[in-house]
Amino acid sequence: MDIIMNLQPHGWLDISITFSEGEIIEIPVSFLTDSIHELADKSSLLDKDFNEVIITGT
Image (tube, rainbow, N blue to C red; front, side, top):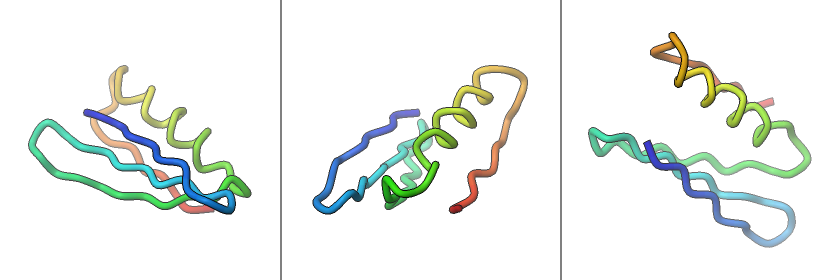
């Protein structure tokens, strides 16, 4: 899994997650949310015994 984060103007960040199967998920997030922390926190769970995580847009 590759995670690429591109800083955009006005406090936005575009996150692209590419999986080994070739699937790409794109997530636009604002620095006004806790999305970056949630992404890092949930992604670290995948290294443990979890096969799937859910990230909510709060």
